[in-house]
Length: 194
Length: 194
Image (cartoon, each protein chain N blue to C red):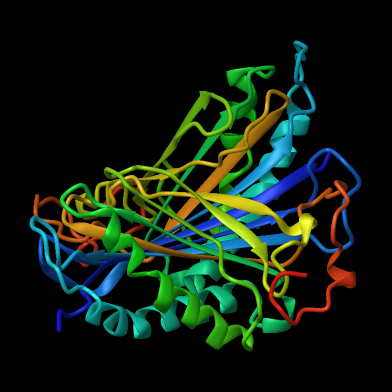
């Protein structure tokens, strides 16, 4: 089963200045969102494999859209995250089926490498509701400067029979990181942690 | 002459395939660009604010060019537009009105001098406030199929001393427009209205 997509939205956010300090180059985050029909809305279905396949499809599509929106080479991506919001006729487990089994591998292809776990969040929700997508360094989860999040919202989605799936990619960490910890420069990025 | 101090720039591009009706051959694109800048007139009444409109022109032009590029780069494809402003709470509604001239000028400049007035809206709001930016046809305001709006906002803007200026463009009518009225193919496009 492939995704029945009603809309795709791509959001790019650049921070040029924070607390009167110039951020050069600006930090940049992209989020790509697909609003899809939930094939299992209104019913309990035991086998969620079709949603897992949709996850794989969207991991590639949305990851590539983010990289393109940032205008970077895939290897220049520094952090990533994923999230899903399921309309009221669906089930939280539908978000899990899309996000966890198969979405990661094609997303990692889109951002080249990606040794680290892709941080995620999920919830039930309706049109106009906020979805906070967590962000973490793509190759070394402990890089402290790259722990962040990005908010997305679409006024008309997800409708009750829809699921909103979001993938976020950045080419940078927080604008003014200064709480120490492992740095991007010092990460080896082999085990996904450090 | 106050300097235009940019803190953030954000873009959002939606690609709409359908809204539960027959999908058009080409998906509708709707885009917005937002700039979050320092409000040079915050925290006090300033009588003469008009020179700032001239200062805003380069910002408007760069925003319009970026939005057009994100929508594919072909000015002939842009059929609808709009603009808006959210004024941080230490500012005044009138500061949003400063965007009328530079916002409209920049889109006209980039889109080959379309005829219709650029519809607009503005309000004072806190960080996270959402603005519904009105959209109408670029050459004839009465074209009913192109009346639309796009909701935008940023979770961390505008702060009290900031202004958020917005431009919006679309590539066509509402995805399933069927409410009659003046059709885009029937306009004369001389007076900006019909």
